[in-house]
Length: 142
Image (cartoon, rainbow, N blue to C red; front, side, top):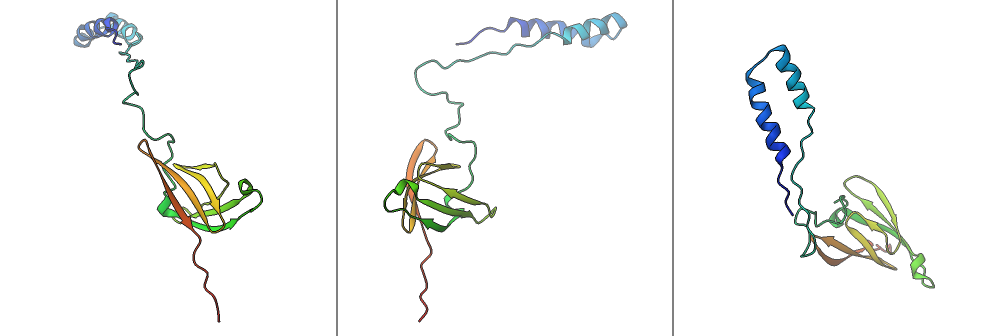
């Protein structure tokens, strides 16, 4: 829906002659004209799909990226898996995240915590995909 902006046209018509002359009375008129509030056109998207100017990212925070995260440890509860906790470290900022199932970190949602891995749902540009982070392999000493 579009509204014509008559106030904007009136303000522009008043401002042009005021800029050409500089006297005391004209200065007072110019200051009163500057006090006029400009109203802009307003568009409303009703029905018929999404607003094309809205971001496709649900969260404004893009970081951390899944490639920057390292799974440090997993405390897995086999009886009540919802109580399991995973510790992640962002290798760029050195920030540590302690997450449970269902928590959101940036664009990453923790979908499932398993004994040696964490499954994430990555939300990018309106699409979702799943990706897994695993603990580093254990080295056994002879």
